[in-house]
Length: 337
Image (cartoon, rainbow, N blue to C red):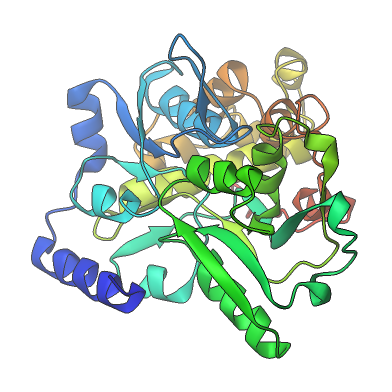
């Protein structure tokens, strides 16, 4: 099915749903858990172990929401979704949100009935090749076969890049990320393309990861963001302000290690963040200590980045654009006041 047809079909689904999307928070409280749509297994973002324990930055974001709502980060159920099925699952209310390495685009934001709640990870699309191919630039990839995943922005970016540079290629498309990396390793294609963060994760699955390299060119902007349905502003506010709270907590040096000390702070911005002054949590429909709950149980943004994809993880991805705005990055949160 063509991408335009899929978008139109989902848009019709949204139109028929009408205003029935309201009161998500009430449903969550009655159910006793948050239903979080995640990827099926992407190291650093959302991956279960052999006992079904999930880890990843997208997973931790949903746990932060559970901490804010229930004061218990375990009150969340993770539903693995393919790129092809993720939007239908959200629109049909199978999940309360997608926290699933999904790129924020205009069509997804305006045509499908979704709201993106802020950027969890600034990413970009890149290329993985075998070192033995002696390729040093993506501009040398003409007349190659390229493995990629269906139902993603990757396909369009790939076509745009090769067309813009007057190069020819053959796309080999699969439904899941596992299928893509297996096809690449088996030699069915010369190149593997997706978001660079995902390339780091998928490269770990190769029998000899060090035999493969990421080319220097970045060919797109991929702001990865959690998203919710249109029609429920309260839940939208809770999801986006949970992200903003985690960013502000890092900026104000409020972490799992420093929380008890910072609760004694005389700084007005810290007091507002932690619910010591004001009723900002109640304005969201939560308790005023909602940020304390998030930090105590899950951590601030820097902590979840480091342990899942940064220096404290196997991926060891540099913060880069995901540094705070005052450290040379793009991560910036509105103030709580």
